[in-house]
Amino acid sequence: MNKDKIIQYVLLSIIVIAVAVSGYLILKPGDNQTVTQGTEGMALVVDGKQVVAMTVYPSKYDPNYFKVKVGVPVRWEITSSGQPGCDSGSMIANGLLDGAVYLNPNAGQVTVKEFTPKNVGTYQFTCPMGMVRGTLEVVN
Image (cartoon, rainbow, N blue to C red; front, side):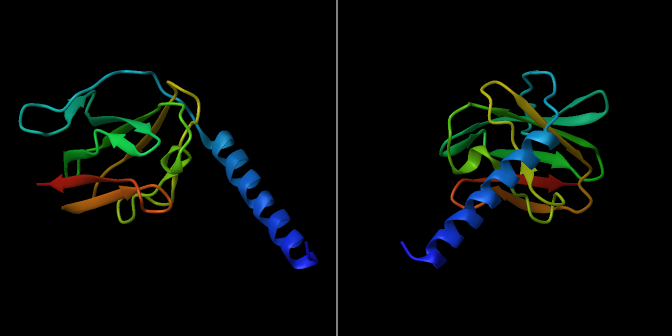
């Protein structure tokens, strides 16, 4: 193996470890409360926040579609299945959240992300590679 390949592997390893450690330090698991959507497909409101809950599996988000109202705070509860996969480390929701959401890899652990949607629209959330996708629709 040549010297350049060794340097590439070392740098890649350092990046992977840094991301894993950062995610571990940032995570704040919440209580494991099951919440479903209302009859009109809208997120239920609990304590003044729209609550959406999903579970992350190796190749899917379940459920993978949510509808919330603009201007009303959202509590997004993301439960880990504990199964490794592209979508089990972090999630990106461009245009909706600032930066990636680092997910807790331990089975049953819940990562909570709170935000208030500012604009009406349809937003995609994905794993870092864009292979596993979901949709969060923000309406009036």
